[in-house]
Amino acid sequence: MKKSAVYWSDLRTSPSLTILQKLDGLLRAAGMGGLDLADKYAALKIHLGEPGNMATIRSPYVAVVSALVRELGGKPFLTDANTLYSGRRHNAYDHLRAGYSNGYSHDATGCDIIIADGLKGNDYVEMPVTGGVHCSLARIGCAVAEADAVISLNHFKGHELTGFGGALKNLGMGAASRSGKKFLHEVSHPVIHRDSCVGCSACVDNCASKAVVLDSAGKAVIDHDLCVGCCQCVAVCQYGAARASEGNASRVCSERISEYVEAILRGKPHFHVNFVMNVSPNCDCWANNDAPVVADIGIFASADPVALDQACVDAVNAAPPIGGTALTDRKYSGSGEKFGHIHPDTDWSAGLDHAERLGIGTRAYELKKV
Image (cartoon, rainbow, N blue to C red; front, side, top):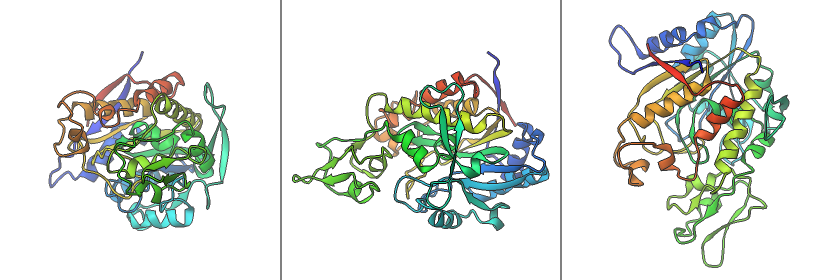
């Protein structure tokens, strides 16, 4: 199998070479400058981040990407879709303001924000999935579905349901409409380990579906008839009581995400950038970010999102762990696979395997330093 090229740049700088100049050079070396973007609407898919989370991609990096899109004659816009959970990204009105508070203004990035699935998450296009085993149609936010080109800008980190979040997760889950997200999440059934529950009610207070209550013994209980599987209870639990469902939920969710990515990217110019910095253990959907589990590694870019994510997993796994983090709290041995150690109920490789079967890309890559 032919290997895909993945380019990366470390974060070393000098007075004559800034990190933003290095990013521009990386994008051009990796082939973004060869995209046909003339007069095309280019969706820059980013996770706008829940306010309070400080691990999201900084706006000056976005400005470099949007400047190159404009240089190529394209019309860039930042986009993200609304969430299932009840945070500040639950609807377009609040979502826009969350993005602005995180620094994604037009002045900072050189482009405007369009919330992909509209005011309440109901504006979507049903896009056909070729080769899907879980679905034949993907419900994708209109702004992404109708864009002429897609460029994903991804903060690479851990994730409590899929193991890690990178290009595939940011696209497949992040561009899905609210009903699309419900489909992707419905296989997840978080559970409460009663022996660990202290009855703090954080899961109750943060459940948008009102699916979690405290029983007569002061322990959390999940009503799975109401639960949408967003796993917010898992993220906010500080005692290890709320856990992502066991079994094949992680695998099926990750495979569904890959099928959504297939629908989004097929037939469109696309390019992908992973920022392997502030590698926090959980998703940027939460209003806090735990300490990074490894030191900042660099920026990776590729036309192949599968090879890109695989290269970043390998880079994180090869990096020395940082003590006093969620990784070492779980008595990490000091070498080997990290994301599955942090989230043992997940299967991070499943989405990559399925994306490869769907023809999105390949896990085989050649790493080229810029």
